[in-house]
Length: 491
Image (cartoon, one colour):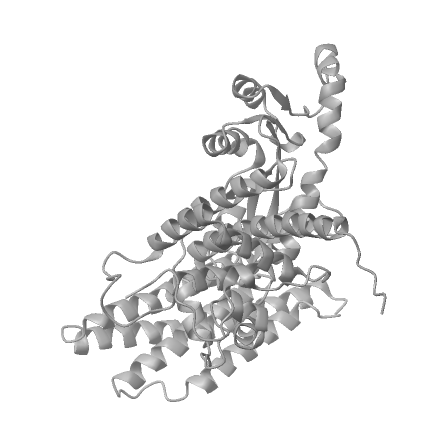
């Protein structure tokens, strides 16, 4: 049984619209809470958001029967706070249990309300969101923000750019990726043998240490200070050969162990095959790394970029070099955003194996499907292609898309036009939007897998727009306070 929120207040409980939020605070929490409060206290807005929130429930779960789960409003508030304030789940759990205003926003606050959240419960519930549901909520939030700051007949002008959201991975080398894979294979096989009470991997911790020692020896061999180049190369080759032979011996033993478990228990235990598939995934990673180390170090080959994997845990991670000064490489995925003149993020796109010039047209089309009054958009040179220029001109009144390289006289005339230069100067504001969303949770994704990555990005965009609504409300309320006449104390 699930409810969006429990409407009946308990004794001594403060309703969400009546929560007193400090307008003079310069912290981010009041801004986010003001945005959430605005959504809740506007009946029409609240009903739209609640209708979308109900979609996160699986169809198999009854809304009326069974044990009550976490209310959907609370899940939404916790998800927004976690990403926007860049908290991990431990900090979020502590603040949900101890911060007065946050507890009131969650619907707690009565003198007998001693409900305490647990970390695992929060994780399981926040993970129910999908990018599609969050995108629907984001559209509602942005339109509510426009009602606050935008004139009715005013058109939207967009700014489009991409940046890299890092995945939670270490710097990859072929030898440390082999260690990661070997370690996981040994750990998982030991867990299975313990589960079925079979002997054979009792010394798994010692075996991991052996692999790590060989890995460190191969790693340190590259730092040899020997002046004899042939001697140095021989040392590197021998240490790497010993390392991959040791790792390969454990992989072969693991394959034999997997076949034994499948033969002995496969017909009785359907879950076993799923567990063995998880082990086999890391076996494949290990075999690939063994082959690449052998080709690179022993045979002297160069490994093509498309054959490389940059994390065995976050396999969607890409090696991205955008040419930024001081940032030679970033490990993650590109995310493209399109924001308007009021700094609301209208649309975003996670770019897997895509470049800027491939997403310019889809970004504008998808944004116009949501916000039909978008009639101008600016880009940087990375988005330019002749086809993009032509296609965008067909659907926008003004396309600010600087061309790369040599400019013809005709092109110079276009880019020197007053209106083009005006919007070109304003385009740099998108960098401010990118920096703001990176500060508010989107510098590094801590969720697992590509599904967790897309959900995390969508939640960060929605949370940032809610904060922008809160900022607009804060300015309005402070302005109203300043208009009120000050009553002097004559006593």
